[in-house]
Amino acid sequence: MRSEKEKMLAGEPYNGFDPQLVAERTRARELCQALTALPPSNDAERTALLEQLFGASTNVYVTPPFYCDYGRHITLGRNVYFNFNCVILDVAPVSIGDNVLFGPSVQVYTATHPLDADERRSGIESGQPIAIGDDVWIGGGAILCPGVTIGARSVIGAGSVVTRDIPADVFAAGNPCRVVRTLRG
Image 1 (tube, one colour):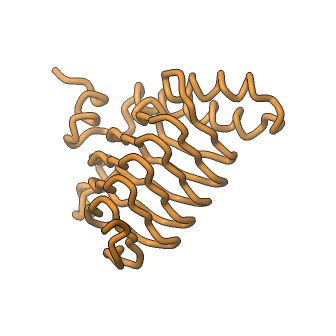
Image 2 (tube, one colour):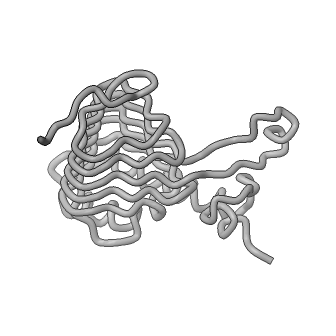
């Protein structure tokens, strides 16, 4: 029988109150809290905490506070920057390419819940992966909804709500986010 974590990562309905998942979320929150408590000049300890959080050596800069559910379900490219107050709900995989910039208060949500109230009350939830291509800039306060892909070199305007895939090489903005113009000829 598959574990709740295996179901979660496969995008299937799972019990979010499973003890293993609760323990892993608690661990991630403790690491995020420790990251926030560090003095800005403590680069060695910051690097160690980020490696523990993401489960791999990283080339990422995080301006605290930063929040995530698990951390280990986030795959980071090189030269990724998170500004203040970013949130990643990584119940499904989040793939972030190289040279990606996150403005302040960007929110990345892979988690989703049943529309039926009785099902929601049961604690069952699911998730859909999010993929962000290389050289993307996501403006402050943007929200990425479950299952979206942002194409390489695109820019998402501040405050946008991304509910569907955004192609490469465009500026997209709004609620819902839509392509405003092409960035390359």
